Length: 168
Image (cartoon, rainbow, N blue to C red; front, side):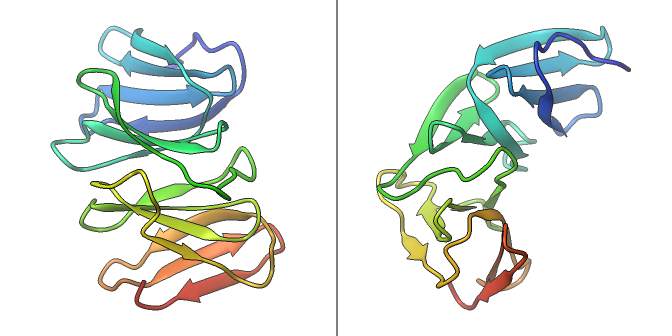
């Protein structure tokens, strides 16, 4: 299938738990949800999305989006409503390919910042980061990953460094 409708480059696409639903995010500041059975867009929202991460909570009904206004947003795709916005002093999205991530239990989110830190929030408390991990490199962190069985977090930055943070 070729899905059309965005006015600028598509930055992210993810299946939504079932094989006939896809959500996309574009540089044109829109999120679109496509139904592949009818090859049409069901829903779209104006939001400057950098990256999308679907949860497996309730059959992928939640979307974590990293937004160029220096926030992470948790969206309930059933209602198309933002249910949490994660932001903090010092958190700046460093580039259009910044990647945010849920932990294995989907009760925490992590994302890298433009000045080299990793911000971690509890999903239940988006007002204040639970932890801010700082490194001495100060290069924008573009991706983070949570270890599948531990509380270790790995981050990579634009200066080609990887850092592993133990027991976060």
